[in-house]
Amino acid sequence: KLEQLAVDNGCPVQYVDAETLGSARGALQLKDGTPTATRLLSGLAPDETVATLLHELCHALLRTEKEAIDPPTELPLRQEEVIVESATYAICNTLGLDTGPMTIPYLATWASETPNDDLQTHARTINNLATHIETHLKPS
Image (cartoon, rainbow, N blue to C red):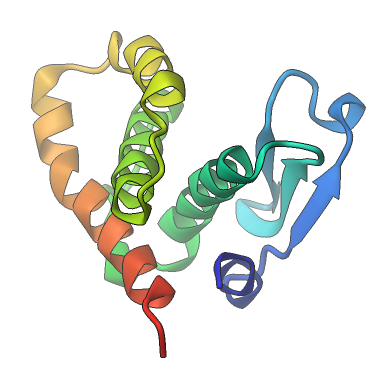
């Protein structure tokens, strides 16, 4: 269902090697600011693949589902990363995946430059992202 949601949002999943991604586990490919593909590192553990796909899908949804997600107009990368990783953590938690060991250090790095007021403001966007994806994961 996650891969289908990526396709539905114009960014089908491509599994690529480390040379393509560098040190990243995933990346959203953009053309003129519009997602065109989700690139994931092949060979990741299943839980890590799910978490990485969710992370990149959250990036895509901030661009393709603006009405449903209601993100702030302009997001500096550091704030977008905090929103995306926080939503990913919430969704993974709902799915029973413990991503804390990956998420906490990642968030700490990006959030260290994000004012507390921004974090509180972004809580609605984080919730909207998580809810949007969780709704698509429910059995039909």
